[in-house]
Image (cartoon, rainbow, N blue to C red; front, side, top):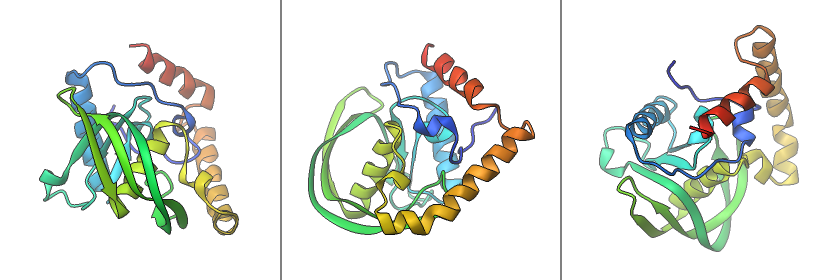
Length: 193
């Protein structure tokens, strides 16, 4: 079954990801699907939990342009090792389509991650790219951008968030999405492979 971007409150979005231990054909296939979904949704990045994969994997192209594949990046087991200067700017999320709010993030960060050759990469990124990294790494830890909103933004987003919950629960009631417990078992099964 082809992967799709899951929407809040899908349990995969709160599931803490496990490190990627093997770079194999299946991982490459998942990465290809994730890139395709990211571009279809007009996103700049996509974390594995957003497609119900419980692994520390993210794809990114901060240009958002599929015609610029040289800007595509794939990272495994990423982590932020340094944060500098903070700035508030508008942010959205592919798991909350249409919802945008101001989020405070570090303007400059230093990140470490593994590339698809298994090599450790370290880089310093700023502004939009730094924001994208922080957003996607949060996903790997089960943290969502609604958790990062200040009190005013949270209040402004409340009805949208409630609507996402309503739509999700209605889809579950119709049998279009499995119950939460079943999803948790599926995630545990994927992790144990």
